Amino acid sequence: MTVAGAERLRVELNELKSERRPKIIQAIAEARAHGDLKENAEYHAAREQQSFCEGRINEIEGKLADAEVIDVRAIEPSGRVIFGTTVTLLNVSTDAQVVYQIVGEDEADVKAGRISVGSPIARAIMGKEVGEEIVVKAPAGDIEYEIEAVAHL
Image 1 (cartoon, rainbow, N blue to C red):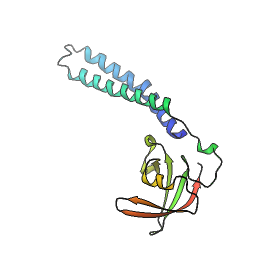
Image 2 (cartoon, rainbow, N blue to C red):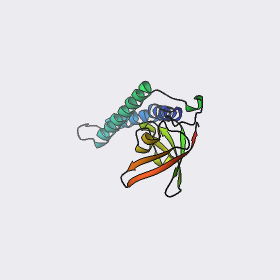
Image 3 (cartoon, rainbow, N blue to C red):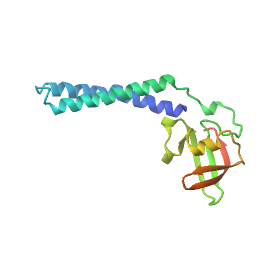
Image 4 (cartoon, rainbow, N blue to C red):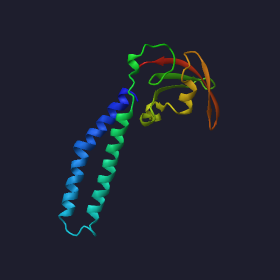
């Protein structure tokens, strides 16, 4: 996991614990005050929200506990594609340029330019160096890229 990915999870965890959880507890208390819990839809909805919230808290805590956080900025640049680097690729056939950061599966967001280390593109470029050409097997067919730059951002 990258430093930024770990920080995003910590922010979400803090928001869940300090804001969301107390609101759900308050909603449960208000629903209990309405009487019969068997037929109280508000109570059941609040309990369901509580279940989802606690599940997400446990999930995030587990991921943070098990994660190895890698700060790519602390690694000496070598021109080689490694986890956490930001890679500029040139599509050889269309001359279109794309920029991706290689991140963990939980951090991936293609629209934001972050691709999972397990994605076909990342698997094809891992360990390669600037100037090398690679072929990515895509559903629409093979796509040939040239690695233009590797940055440690």
